[in-house]
Amino acid sequence: MGLLYPGALLLLALVPALILAYLARERPSRVTVSSVLAFRALRGLRAERFGGRPRFDWIFFLELLLLCLAVLAVAGPYVLRPSSPVAVVLDNSAATQAELAGGGSRFKAAVEKLDEALAAHQSAGQGAGEVAVYLTAPHPHRIAPPFKSIAEARAAIAKVVPADAPADSAAVGGLLSSLASERRYTKVIYAGADQIVAAAAPGITAFTVSEPIPNYAIGSFVLRREVFGAEALHARIRLANFAAQTRDLEVIVTGDGRELAHAKSVLGPGETGQLEFPELPPANVYRAELLPTDGFALDNTAYATVGSMRAVSILFVSPTPDDARGLESIPGVAVVARTPEAYAPWELTGADVAVFEYSAPKELAPVNALFVMPPPGAPTLGFVVKQADAVQIASWRKTDPLADSVNFRLLNLRAGEMFAVHPWMSAVVEGQDGGLLLRGERDGHRYVAAGFNLFPYLGGRNLPMSVLTLNVLSYLAGLSADSTGYRTGQPWLVPAGITQVALPSGRIAAVTPGSMFSETAAQGIYELIGRNGTRTPRAVNLADFAESDLAHPAPIHVEVAAGESAPRTIAQRVPVGVWVLLAIIALAMFEAAVVYRRRRRGALVSA
Image (cartoon, rainbow, N blue to C red; front, top):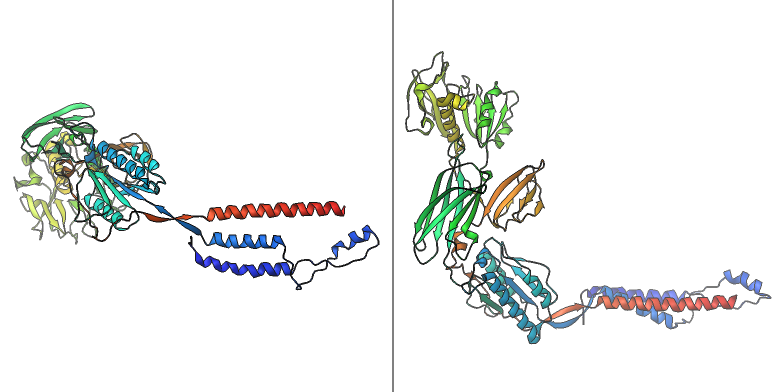
């Protein structure tokens, strides 16, 4: 037996106080009375005196025992009991969903191996002890506080389902190394799809269920919008063949439930490739399906949404803010219009592109920016301009991205201004007396200056000017960049205005804007729900060729010192403070009952 808090025994110093209390108890004195009435009248004049020969009855020793038991309870008594605690690590990563040749999945086989190992541990007479159960995906974690019995642990393991996220083999190796080195468990049991690599791993029992399976996978499904104004999207899908034979692979792309496109690719063993879909019709949710099917269905499907491409935010500063109205009709564009008086420089931090029409900032804008007919003498821009009542285009760079597909002969520019030679911007379009359209880069940002007005945007009603405007905005916004997408198991930041997230399972989770959302272990479509009830779909995919390569699983490296072997049994501390408290309560109730009976009998005699 031992004590968790031996210092609490100092409270035994209260024993002398109990003795002093008994020394100060009431002492009987002789009083001669002539009648009972006088005796009752004199009862209040009790004679008490301190000192003398102490009289300790059995109640004193009972109270002394109660005091000692209370001090013992505070000290935290415990007894040592032989125990065999076990740690269980179950691989629930995406790769365990693969089907085995004999039937059933890898995950099912791993659970069966664990159940048999725990049953054998219990039948060997080592069932006394806690069982800690850990999962590997999306990151190593314990599913609950340690279970008190093997039966509870087996019941909990039977309810676990595999995740759609890969496991971090390095983190799993660190967990196994820690469990085997800390000597808190007599046995560490691992079951999963990855092979354990260890020079010496005493105390670890590993069950590997990694039968090689031929597999074909979709690695990524990304969308991009080539230019402003185009509703059709460009899709790129990466494929891989992890089989031992050359395969003809086909991908079918559907949008909102209807087939939009399909394409085929021939890939050799271990070869990767990609399919391009240059013009996918608009849809909210796209789904790509890979054929032929195989034993690992998770990576044969991938999702994409238009919402995965962030809308381009344009800050339009002009004394005539109505010129920005036409930009709102361009897909994937959000416009905020300000007059120069209402404009604040801090607004640039939330914009992808800034447009300054007939105005210029006091400092060079720290974002990609377009300057339309800037006022003469703007010191931060360094423009030297010459006003012209009639602007005529003399030449242009036909290979420049700003001039792509633009018929400059059809432009009616009217009045404008021309730029002299600029120190760091070059002319794309030139007039009779200088540059009309300049572009350049400064401190990692792109800048364009126009000596004629590109706005308002009229779309098809002024096609040559609209194409030029779209080229300029595409250059500044970099719209040809691919959407990054989201992967299973990776948390993401909750956007502003989002209060709930609907998971692929249908469950709705409450979230806080600006916080990290980590319930991303399932592949599929997540819906971001705003305060006004609007829903924005977001695609989350496995997109991991390393996890899809079922023939070459990632090894788990375990590092355990050779001399660190797991003990057969561990002396477990079992607290007995509760039993001490129960004894105190029982003795206190016994004392109270005896004292009550004494007082009851004394009251009857006096009456």
